[in-house]
Amino acid sequence: MATIVPASTAQSLAASLATAGVGSLTVPTYDRFADGETLAAVPDFDDEEAIIVASTVDNDAHVELLQLQDAVREAGASDVTTVIAYLGYGRQDKAFKHGQPVSARAVARAISTGTDRVVLVDPHEPSVTDFFDVPTRIVNAAGQLAEPLADLNDPLFVAPDAGATELAETTRDAYGSGDVDYFEKERDYDTGEVEVMPSDAAVEGRDVVLVDDIIATGGTMSGAIAALYERDVARVYACCIHPVLAGAARTKLAAAGVERVVGTDTLERTVSDVSVAPVIADALDD
Image 1 (cartoon, rainbow, N blue to C red):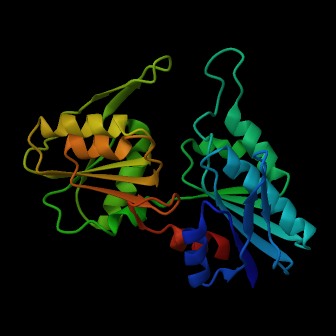
Image 2 (tube, rainbow, N blue to C red; image 1 turned 60 degrees about the vertical axis):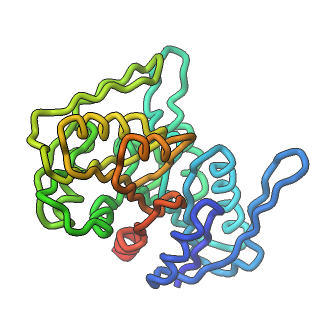
């Protein structure tokens, strides 16, 4: 059986994977020196097969992942799988202006050097798999979001843009009933502002479930919630796979009138009500 190595950003998910029988847990140490440098180590690791579980939510998390990969190799692992529950820089999949880097490509190449394969949970752009130099698989966790939803009234599952429609459909299918629609969304890449335009779907008196892969600043989602309440919806739920919830995002959603925010444990937040461990376990078992 493999040994699961949790990064500091994915401890709950790693524990759930161990409970699911994927492997046994080792306990890394995470230290920081006076000059700001970090040191992630695996003092008790003793196995040939390692499954590293991480969410690269910030720069330190990226460095920590690279250190854990190197640490298990140094400790004797000959087979390393890297599970990235949330891929930081995943939205920077191209150079939006002259002279900018393709940051997703840069981090993917770095991660590839220390692993034999990668499992990604719903990256913002599926095409980022092309940036990795090792076999890379995507798992879809949107179906997990339906678990906390109960007794919805004539539900409508709405994606904030056309690109997220498949996520809304998967959540609807897991719930078992309801319609699917999406908003038109336009982003100003200079200011970062997003304008959300509702479709013509009938929403009056219905429960609406907004489904997206990421809620970051909450601006897009809160705008969608406000637009829906202007059209007399009953309740609005905000569901996402990756609850980044940066800054005042949670407050924005509450102020817009959201009934409930549901996220997964790809990031450890107070709204992480469901786990992606089952779909990861299935992928690792294939």
